[in-house]
Image 1 (cartoon, rainbow, N blue to C red):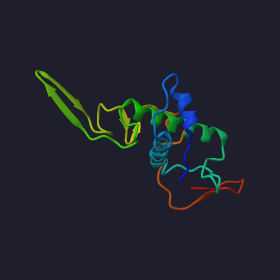
Image 2: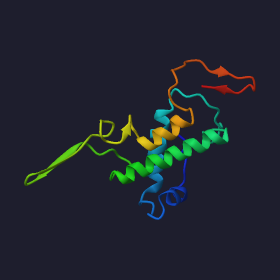
Image 3: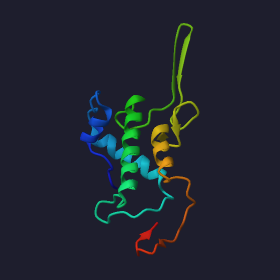
Image 4: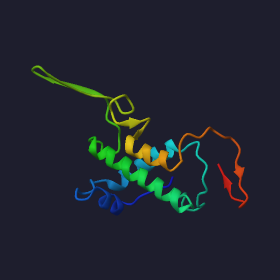
Length: 143
């Protein structure tokens, strides 16, 4: 599995806040979340790295990964593991945290809204499943 951003890139993206401890693990999990959103998307990848060969596609996937990691940090999930729904009450004050992927949690499926929006705007979502590779004129197989 490819990891689409580096801890240094995450630190730059989150600045002036620092990258959390375990940034490499967080980015690996954020990359996996992005991969899950791209299951039905076809684009050429480098056989060695697994990264998109088209610079615009690669940039969108990297940005979505950084947004996903930032979403996890902002939601107290810097370890990269989705927190379960929970609630607490103190006197007359009740606080409820929705489960990831539910209404009001700022997610689209398993992605934070901003990560999903980056992929949507790049034309990388909303594709129907295909079981056969499709070959373009340049001879590159797209899945």
